[in-house]
Length: 297
Image (tube, rainbow, N blue to C red):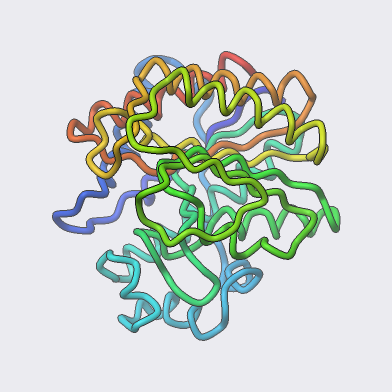
């Protein structure tokens, strides 16, 4: 199959003045288009349905979301709530589902959104209303019960919602490499690497180059879902890791290369990114797409 991209203009929703740069989705798409990385037009996803959300989230919380209700369950998102914003999250989740389905055809797919790993079954957290990663995993496991899925989460922040959701599920291996002394309150992933402030390219990549092959050897995943957060970047406003743009591209090259080498289909999601200069965040995301295209194209 090669490489497929999934995108919707509906990924953008107006959230007002906020550290979360939602305009990045359009900017990433525009750069990919201008640089000829997209190839064919990206796939337009359908929004995740209420039934999709109920594969992971509790009914009362899903009803809050579907009616865009401001409740204690939704206000913990630290985002405003409106039908437009919730529709953007439903489209992002639908994009992650579609990316996973496309990748399972034999290759790699990138959703130009997604990675909202802080959402729990019964509440929002950390700019995340819908845990698109968990929803998509449950959807692909409907194709094959017990499909072994490895989550490789390289966001600055631990994927606490995803870790919680799959804590007792032996079919899903959750790996997270993140800064220790930051939000969120940590859950137990299958394997957590807690980094101290100031870690840069070489130490980070050394951890990754030991962990990922070990996960593949021991767990033998049939599918990899890669959260390629841009926020370990040295210029990120919310963290204190010291990865360079070049170092993050090496991270992406390595992850995709391991999947390709072992014949494992992979889907990638953009995740977080809060650089003082949004153009840096966009460059990091574009590089993730470029790494996928170079490896699987």
